[in-house]
Image (cartoon, rainbow, N blue to C red):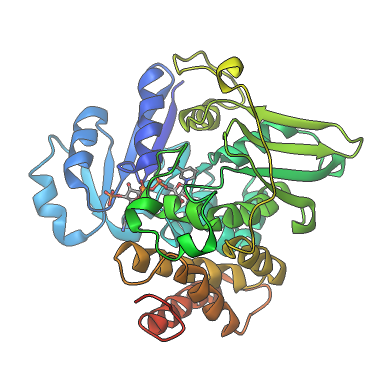
Length: 389
Ligand SMILES: NC(=O)c1ccc[n+]([C@@H]2O[C@H](COP(=O)([O-])OP(=O)(O)OC[C@H]3O[C@@H](n4cnc5c(N)ncnc54)[C@H](OP(=O)(O)O)[C@@H]3O)[C@@H](O)[C@H]2O)c1
C-alpha cells in the first residue's frame, strides 16, 4: 500500500525537495494534501501534477482566483485552519511540516492529535512547545521523523539505542557565510551577503538563522526534545565542510557520526522511507574529493544567538517560544532592510530580558508569549538600542 503524504509548505525549499523525492518513488508514495502561502503559480503546477484531494493557500480571499488556476475538483481551504484540515485528513498517513516559523505549531499539534506520523522540518514547533508536543507524541504513539540533517544524523546514529547509552550529542554547524568574518565586518554585511550560504540552498529565514548561528541554537533545543538529552550534554562544533551532519558520543567513549554530501533530499528520503533505505540517483560522497574534515569551536562571542538559545533552553517554560518569536521578527526586519545583521541578537536579547517566564506553559500561554514577543520586538525597531536602522 502507498504511504499517503501531506506536505505543508510545498512551495518552499524543503517542500519542493520532498516532492522531488516522492517523484522518484511513484509506487510507494501518494500526495494527499498540499499547503502553501503566496506562491500560487508554483502551487497550481503542483496541484495539476499531484492531484491532491485538498489544498490550502495562505489567504482565503485568494481562493476564487486560485480556483481558476487549477484543474478538477480540488477542495480549497486557507490559512492555519486550512493547514489543520490537511494535517488531520482521514486519507493522510504522514504529514511533512515544512512551513517556516511558529506557523507550523498548530497544524503539527493537530496532526499528532489525529494520530499522524510527522516528518518534522519545522524545528520552531519543538523550540516553542517541545514539552507539550513530545508529551502528545508519547500519548498518541506517533512517530516524529526528523528532516533536519543534524537530527536525522543523530536519529541514524542512535538507531533505536537506549537514552542511557548516550553521553553526548555533537551537532555540527557549517558556520554559515560569515564563519571567517570579523565582528567589525559583520556590522556592515548586507541581506545579499547573508543569503549566500556556502553549502546549503535553503529558504531565506533559515539561511539568515544559519548566518547568525541562531539556526544551531534552535537545533540544540530541537535535539533536547527529540532525543531527551539535557543541554549540558549537547555540544556544537563548527565543521565548515558540512559532511559530518552530527555525531553521538556513547557512554563507552565510542563516537558514531553520520556523513553524506550536503543534500537535504537524503534526510527527507530517510524520513519518508523509514525504517527502509531505498536506492536513489543522488550524487554520492567522494571523500577523496573532500580531502579534509575540520572542526573548531563556534565563535559565540561574535555570534551571540547561539548562547541566547542555550540560555532560553535552560530557562525553559515560555522563554524558548519568546526567543523564537523575537528572532522571527528580527530576521524579517533584517530581510526588509530595517535593521542591521548584528542588531538581530541585540533585539532578541532585549525581548528575552523583558519577558516574565512562565514555567510548564499550556498551549494558550505559549501562543500568548509568542504574540507578546512579536509586539515587544516591533517596539524596538527604530530604537536607539539598535546600531543601524
Ligand atoms: N531549507 C532547508 O534546507 C531546511 C533544512 C532543515 C530544516 N528546515 C526547516 O524547514 C522549514 C522550512 O524551511 P524552508 O527553507 O523550506 O523555507 P521556505 O523555502 O521559506 O518555505 C516556506 C514554505 O512555507 C510556506 N508558507 C509561508 N507562509 C505561509 C502561510 N501563511 N501559510 C501557509 N504556508 C506558508 C511557503 O509558501 P509560499 O512560498 O507559497 O509563500 C513555503 O512553501 C523551516 O522550519 C526550516 O527551519 C529547512
